[in-house]
Image (cartoon, rainbow over all chains, first blue to last red; front, side, top):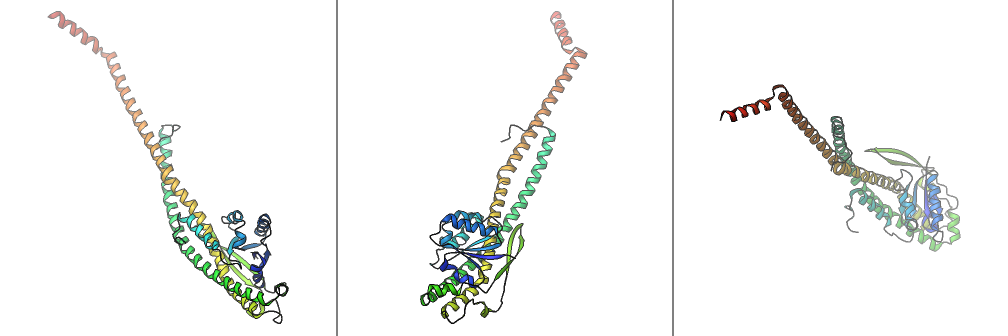
Length: 109
Length: 230
């Protein structure tokens, strides 16, 4: 049995705990290394899906990229409480560019 | 360009020809794989985009609800309300094979299926906005999981497509032309060898005939006779 986790600042993620997802607080003042460490720890334990707020993902892009090629876990960006930065869609766009060579789905957004 | 290390022998030629056949077959297969992967990928990535837009909208709405709830409740009260979550989600992962890419398929189970039973707090000390927000988030969750599934599949497939495309290109533009020139080089070299040995044989035959019949001596003698007769 696998589990799903949510990482991000408390305000953005506390609602998910009501759904039964495990929440891991990583506040803005936490260092990027610590955040990367948490993500690494989660990926090595029983978490198959890790949702991570866009604002946090922005601080550890290298770590996020690392999980793109691994079969598990799936690291998925979600918008936080401070609004949608569009990084989530950018990640999809990146996949398209990688596969097709140029972006043919999103146009120039 | 033919590499300098190839040995122009018949055995090498056969080997290279076999290799070329395999390379062509592999190229064709990989090209088919790439095309099919691309088709599947484009379908999936469109779905991914739609799902993401829905999920982002859903989460944004839920967040608005949470913000409203926070405005009428103390930090402390919110923290207490979510301290002991009642609901538990467990995931099941199976793998689906799309053109040799293993993409995950997630199914989830919740501990309580009753939507009203998931609140981890009594209704007395919390704002109604909080309930709405949680319900909204719960409604988005199945889509979030679907999003995780498609997005991961897209990422994996994109990586595989890139790899396959590289292989196709390497075969098409490097390996196959290289083999073709090598084969051409060897067959020309072999032809050349054959011609040279033919000429050598003809030369040897001439020399042997000369030895046997002394043509040139006789011709000289005839010439001398002619001179004397004149």
